[in-house]
Length: 243
Length: 387
Image (cartoon, rainbow over all chains, first blue to last red; front, top):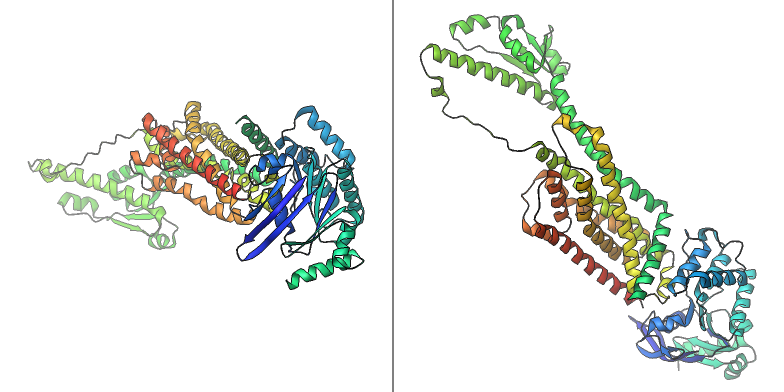
């Protein structure tokens, strides 16, 4: 479970995140939706302890990620905004590197990689150098690498960015499976259709603040409109104009 | 502690594997060490050519028949041939090196005690003619002073009266010293440069390269401590650097018997024992090189940017070697506190067969290791700032 309370962070003149609080429950897919530059990536970076918040806290299963980042990361699988692979290593070696850094080794490690390879349909390419991968294959290996240590919490930053239709579908199936296993899944997106197709809960962010949260139906209700896309336009529009 | 070590080894193994598959890293680590032995061979070749050149010098003489004794002496130093008719013009054209004109009145003037004017026609602007001029000057001067003394003796005067000073140079240098000074300084410089150059690409690839291919953030998101990431990358760079140094020394060791340095009067005290000692002296410097280059490259966003800055810094470890070859200053204790300079001196002394105080060796290693520690600490700070 992820709990975020009053997070704020400024970079020079820019208030990237002003005040963000929400919770992402286990077994639930929580979608963080917002226009480009709304502060989604900065919020997530504070969740995994890569950026220090000016104010507020983020807990991963009760561990403050600013205080104990290494402990928090053990319970966290992250597909970050930039998810580059090592091109000269094979997919398997890429995954193994991260598994070893997470403390896995020996037979357990091999079994885990084999299992992930099957789930993500990587068997055909896993022993080829990553430099030759398609965008979809690269993303799958990045996912495998992120969840190789079997984390109870998973954060995905714009996971379907740049993927074709087939890969996007595979990614969505993967996200649903992870949540069905009882994990807490938080992902960010700026695409309405994606969020609508996947999420149990929504957190709408604009200009560094949470402007609405709840189930898709609740968010529509808050905006006073019938469709999620309209709700997005109305709520984000309000935030842009300011109070 | 155990965990840091384990994670560090994971990073180290991955960087080695990744580096070994990178053509750029491998080629630079393999090719640069070739330059050391190549340079030694080149210098040895140049020196031996200089020796041969002297024997190839040709002097053309006009009127050789008038001065058989002088010609015989010249022939010991040079090849003497009769001058053609248009000798002076041929010297101007560069076809001949030098022409000596012996006047027909040579014998007569000698008998009379008149000065004999010998004319040497030469183009002194050509460096290749200097050897001939020097040889002729020496022979004529010797001949002249001998004859002068005999005339004084004949008149009952002690010749030493006209020679108030005698300069007698006692050269105490051994062939080891002479060889050690130039070739040793050169070899030392290339060994030191290998320690800096051979880990250059792996240092860039492991930092700026990670950023460029966007794998830096995922790596920082693993539960690996920042320290173990830094140490693992540093060890990988150090391994490449030391591999390059070893290769450079090994190739030089192999090529020495082929070079025949004895022929040019140079002896380089490089055997397996000296080479191992050199490796030991270089190890702290290679550690420093790896740490410094990682630190600089970790500030850079792209491979190109890091490459630019790091190739500029490569100039720094070259300075002591250059200085030592052109202006060999006597080693002083303070120099042991300057990394690269201290190693340059230690290597030169080893090759000259000189013993160096243990305290000097320790302070040379100590200062390089101190710099290593500082650079690693700074690098760890840089990495930690990002999360």
